Figure 1 (cartoon, rainbow, N blue to C red):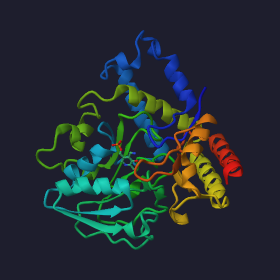
Figure 2 (cartoon, rainbow, N blue to C red):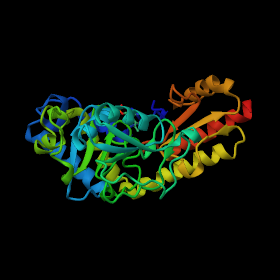
Figure 3 (tube, rainbow, N blue to C red):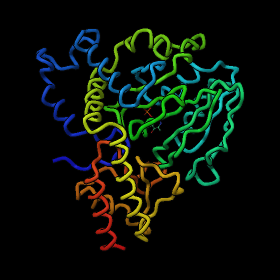
Figure 4 (tube, helix red, strand yellow):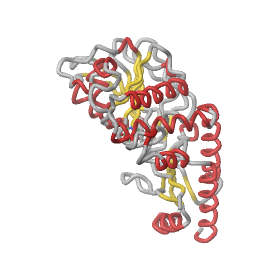
Length: 360
Ligand code: PMP
């Protein structure tokens, strides 16, 4: 019995992918072994990794002058890898602070770089906004400018890509990658933990423009050195083979669903349905400025917070799982990643209306 899983990550995966994984778990490709038991250097596995990269390139239309790296350590690892690779200890770097994940990235940068400029901080709106388009001016000579296009906890998403001509733009796209088309060429570097829209946890995707390679500061561990990883085809050490294999299947599924334009239209419809239900209810509330609302993570509160435990328990009983808000903010949060179908959002809004009728 599958539930609709609204978890923020690790998150729901497409059922056909899970079924294929199940079917070939003990005998993958006629090898008499699972994919977890074959060498990452075998021809068969190198094909798996190669196909995953090709599919990612095709889906995101990644230009030829970008490398795709499959790493480990999560997005948190990249909070450090970005400054280690792109800045020196005495560099200046720019950051935008739109919430909890921006803050973590900034914290790590401060340990590694002398001058961390926080050019915009949305504290005054309690992180329910992003800077207005056209208002951010990156520092000339900064090694890079970092922002978080989608804040997974706050449910705040940029509806635009900040303009940056000289300073390489770096984005933590953990919770928005593959949710709709993205102009990769506007960025110097993109990174994402896989466990939302790409596949299982344990895999980290980095997409980096070639001219930014080969600049890691002395002392950078090899596994965090983009150039070293690029040279070895992300196989400088053993990659997370199972996660990479599942990611490949998810990317195949995404392509078969019509790619990012199609999934983007679907994601927009899912988010609109939920926000409309919240906004017209007079009972549920989403605190985020309308133009900055995330398509992927929708936090909301009830008019009577004392009902939160009943809401969550009843939702769970109705097959709607993992709706609790992040432990730092409470309330509810529905994550609507690619693999969560419109039927799941429909079931959620039906439940919300019924709950309101009974308790409102
Ligand atoms: N950035 C964002 C936007 C996230 O949502 C998360 C995880 N939820 C992280 C970074 C941290 O990712 P990881 O656990 O892969 O290190």
